[in-house]
Image (cartoon, rainbow, N blue to C red; front, side, top):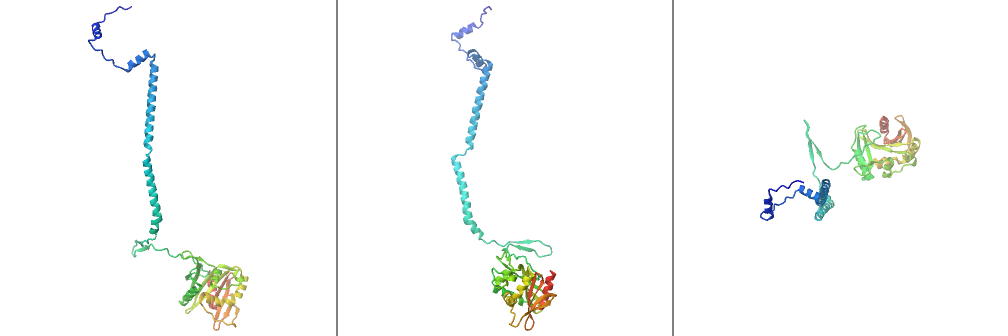
Length: 328
């Protein structure tokens, strides 16, 4: 047993106990807490560290949860803000609908000014491109015999009388010898008319066609004017057929009406009487049929080939047309 050593500060302690000097304030530290817990709560350093880590983890989770809740509350717009956005969208949609219904029809009726765009060229006057109304689109011409000019007719907008009058006027204009003008017939709107067939033209003109010929007619045909001489224009038409024999029989049956056909389509009157008859002959090496008038041949027709019939108003015109048809 160690000997008791007198405390050199005993007087000081006694003074403190006697109340002469105030007791010093104890400072609480983590070391003191750990020591106290180990002494009073039977804790170890390890258990205390685990509890401290658990407490800190719980605090971190609570902090994260609070931050997440605060962020989610901030991202959700207020009800008043949502209503304002919805109202703006509804107003814009209403304005667009009103513009489409009321304003657009007015704008489309306002005529736009013509715009001319000059193009640069060297040594020439500048050309101009003008934005105008879409022009009429002429259909491609089909001409059995090559023509130097053409004239278009639309049976949807012109009567048979108007067409015959205009063809007669073209005939009176005259033409160079050997020159041909093609009369093109179509129907439908002016922008994209459709070419008609021979049977459609004859039905439009009210012309009767024998059944033997009608059943053999094909769509391609030609109506034209030939410059026969300096003062004579010979009207003619060309028919395409599928059967030579039945078509020939149909033509013979049709002969009595041929003068009326020229009068109806061309406005070209041919004087005939009951004594006049067609007879067989040869023209340009082809079998032909002629109708003699009082002074000259009035009507002549022949097969240029097995499937092409040419009908005109004189022998010389028939000979010229056969020669031109066989070159194509």
